[in-house]
Length: 294
Ligand SMILES: [Zn+2]
Image 1 (cartoon, rainbow, N blue to C red):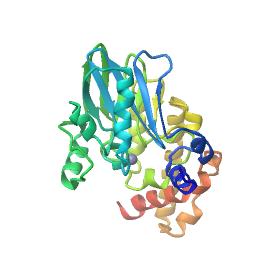
Image 2: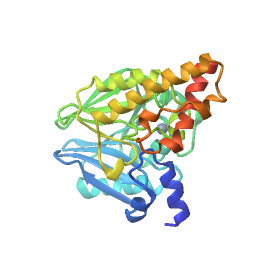
Image 3: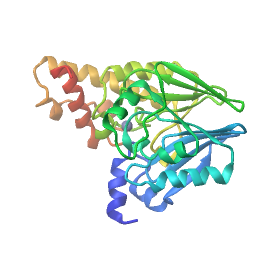
Image 4: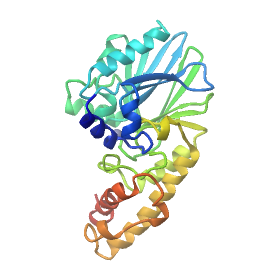
C-alpha cells in the first residue's frame, strides 16, 4: 500500500491509537476472536471493523465496510467461511453511513436478511447507492435476534453521530458493538461530528451506558487495537457535556461561529488524543446547533 493512502486512511480514523505507523505494519485485514467468548469475532479491513457471531444455526454479520473497495466484503465472507459453513442468516447495519455499510450484496446473495434502523432504511431507499443494499427489515426502538443459542439485542439509544445508530448488545457476553459515536480516549473527528446531533448525543451516551455491558467493539480500531470500556464512554459524555456548556455560553454572547471556533477550548480534555486537531470541528458543530438551531 502506498504511503499516501496510509496517511489518508489513518487521518480518517476516529481513534488515535491506530496511527499511521501501526496501520503501515498491520496487514490489510484481520479476523480475531474476542477474548473470553466462544463465537464472537471482529473482522477488520484497513481502518474499519465489524463484529460477527457464529452459531450452529447460522451467522450474524454486521457492517460490510466496503465503501470504494468491494473486495472487503468478499474477504469478510471468505474469512467467515474459514470458520464455519453455517448459513449467513442476518446482516445488521450499525447506521446509514456508506463507509460502514457498502458492499452488503455479498451477504444478501449468501442468504442474509438485511436489518437496520428505520431511518437508515428510509435514507438508503431514497439515495439508492449502487453498492448499498437497502435493508429488508427495519427496527424502531428495539429488536432481539435469537439464533443458535445466541441472543443479540439491537437497540436504538437515540440520535448521536447519526440519526440511525443501532447498538448491538450481546447480553450474555456483556459485549456491545457501537459504531462512530464513542471515540475511545480521543476528541471526536470532523467526520464523527459532521452530521451529528449535539446534546441528543449526550442523552444517547447515557442510554447506552444504562445497558448492561462491559466491553465495546468500535467501528474503527481503538488505540493499539483495544476494545472500548465504560470509562471511555463516561469520558466522552463528560467531554460533550462540558463542550455544550461552553459553546452555549459563546453562542449566547453572539460568538458563533466566529470567534467561538477559535476561542472556545476545553483544556481539561487536552490530554485526549487528537485534541488540537479536532476541537475546532467540535466547537463548529455545536455552534451550528446553539447559534443557528440546526
Ligand atoms: Zn458514521
